[in-house]
Length: 158
Image (cartoon, rainbow, N blue to C red):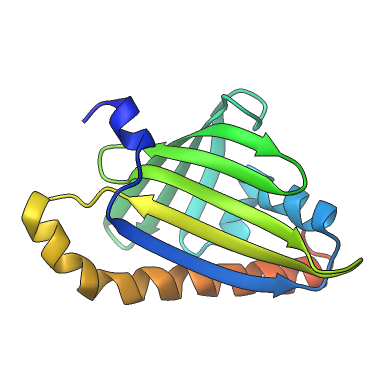
């Protein structure tokens, strides 16, 4: 699979949503503070490999649980503050587009939607396994966004 293949949505789709009691500008700035994402995404360290974190930047997220390590490489393909950031995951395991959207719901409330369309590994076996993996993926994304919301609302992220 080439990089351009990773730009097309895969069949492993997952979405999580949270409401944050904060202005969209504050929420968006916290979302794209790449190195601090590890504070709200469990077991994960994030760093900017190249660029300034904006469009064209290469980002690496490494998730480690015990001896298991997952390296997620992504490129920022669109940055539209304070509304949207789009990435393309192009690592060996995680591949496909993702988007984080901020929708203002008033002066001090913002809806965040995190949507991913992963290409499933292992061909037909991956498609069979996805219904078993999806609930965990959704729960993980939702839990991370809930923690993110609490941290923004408490002034820990801005």
